[in-house]
Length: 141
Image (cartoon, rainbow, N blue to C red; front, side, top):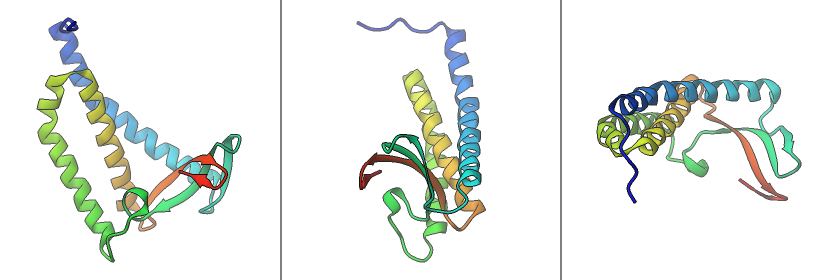
């Protein structure tokens, strides 16, 4: 069964809310990273959040996902790739927005994460701040 379409004014409101949502997420990302850096000034230091399962552990990731590396110019390569992805997302956004609310929220989440990591790479050569540490025993993610 198909959901009824949103009233035109509600659809416009959701589209208009996408980028303020992304901006709020970028601010939250940056603020949480700076708060963890202030609370855990040494990389590798941890603080328990939920027992041993969830911890905040300060780490800097100079590579891409899962600390992969791309050679001596990886910082600049990743900055360029991030800008390309953001440009592609911007170009694809009108088509995404037409598919529904979930796509708009997803685009805001992806854009905010990319911008937050881009700012980390631009501001510091230490890399992207990572701090959420989940796992059991030695098996951590």
